Length: 358
Image 1 (spheres, rainbow, N blue to C red):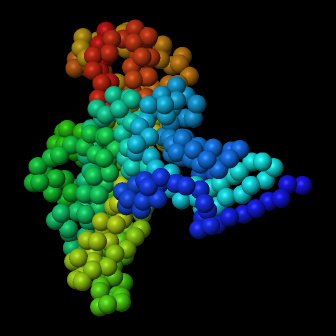
Image 2: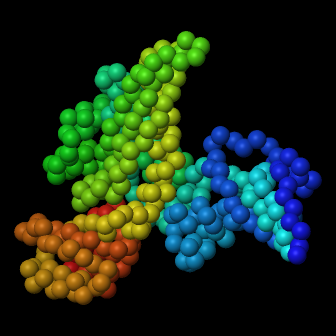
Image 3: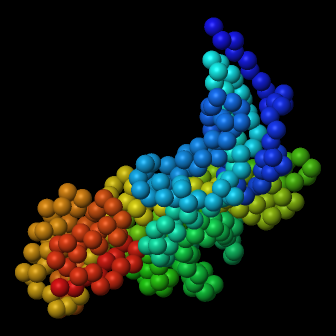
């Protein structure tokens, strides 16, 4: 029987590059991967690609053409295989666990760039925050989430400070946003998706060194303003310390926003592709005039024969055209292709809203 040997990372004699030995930057995503090979060098050389496969599978179905394209074209300069956490040899095979870091947002950015329609989706982040139940004029959690989305290649709209503050007050005053509220937000922000919710920080007491300690909670919802569908909902918790109550509270909100910012980009990418929600994504199809009842009825009949289309409803029809709402298992581009095949001409597309004509 082959003798097994176990080495700690400190006892390794494997020669690593200076980049691999350097300290991992704070603005990276770190993942531990298991690799194996006939030699140490052969096993270690697989770590970077293995880490990319693991992280990319969180956004794209493994093995699909798009998955393979992004994996093939992604710059390895943004990936760094670091220390070996554990290593074991048995039967001529060396197995090890390697810590790999990837520049934060770089992989998400590659996915977005490979799908131009994702980069065109307009996103607004409006999250009211409070410290000690007082509104925060310049929200820290909102800033961190916005920074993470921009760093991932997504398009975040920037309204004036006056408009943004007014919309924060609107969101704060409405436990549940109605159709009129969503329409107002969409018009004033000129956006497709709204990242909203609520964040607050509260004191939990003094900590070492005379500093103040605060805990924070952030509840986030991602709403498709065209249909009102909630694409994602999640709560985050964190804490922070500072010399004063204001600084400690803002630090706690910033920390919890950073945690949310690490999770949201990949979740949004999946949702925009129709693969990240429990329910199929809802789309709004607007038919420009002139449009007759017979044309609309014929279109809905053809669409209902497609197994990817569910919950098709004609919401309105008058001299201004018609509005249809449906659930679809796929992206907006996929739905546009289905509408085109069904006899309609796609005249425009933004977010989850598609405009067609006959």
